[in-house]
Amino acid sequence: MSALDRVNPVTPLAAAVLYSIPMLMTIDVVTAAVALGAWLVIFAAAGIGARTVLRRSWPLLVAAPLSAVSMLLYAEPAGRIHAQVWLATISDGSIELALAIGLRVLALGVPTLVALVGLDPTRLADGLAQVARLPHRFVLAALAGTRLFGVLGEDWRQIALARRARGLGDTGAVRRALQSAFALLVVALRRGGTLATAMEARGFGGPTRTWARPSTVGRADAVLLILAIAVAALAIGVSIAAGSFRPVWEGASW
Image 1 (cartoon, helix red, strand yellow):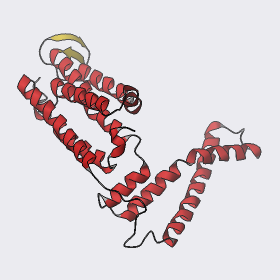
Image 2 (cartoon, helix red, strand yellow):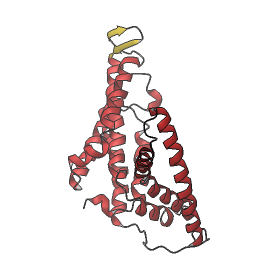
Image 3 (spheres, one colour):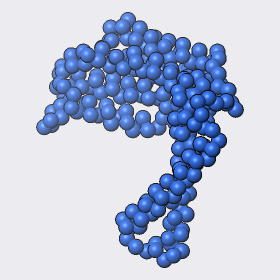
Image 4 (cartoon, rainbow, N blue to C red):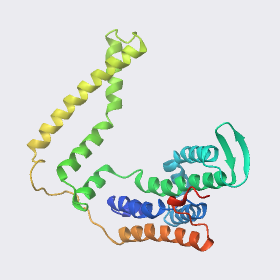
């Protein structure tokens, strides 16, 4: 069990906000690199292996290079021009900005995805209702929808098998998909209506309720919040000390 399993599911959400706000105010290479390196060290110390980090944040390995390439080619030229083809211009400024953007995507996205991906929906709903004090009616409705979303794939497979058994599976692909989608919608609406009736019958719409699983916060939650603030402060502090700090409102002056 990693350290993240011991924190309340609401805490990573709060930590992501506290960390992201200051990080979004800067757009330089040093800040992003220091923050990303600090989080990788923290993950290793918390028992979160490199395989887990890659499995949870692999979409960023695609998004970060794409963002960097767009900045490399189409950012406002600054400094020496290295290449220019039609609208695309590669300059000293665009190279530095591309590196900053790519690292920034990783520095913001990797810790957020590692902390949030894999959260138990039931524990998250308990935390949102008991710790964050969100209306339990909407929280439980969202939880029920999340649980039912997982059975849509099986419903689609059953619909396809039923159509094939009735000799309706040989029509065109587009027509078959539209008919199956409509049937899936009908099934989902029926199941949703049944669930809503059952929830109302059990008193889910009442003004107060009790909880089978109390959701609390403790020392581990405080540590995570402190780490989120500390990493952002460390990254920005190192960037200022190195003289590379660039606020976002000065992004055009590379």
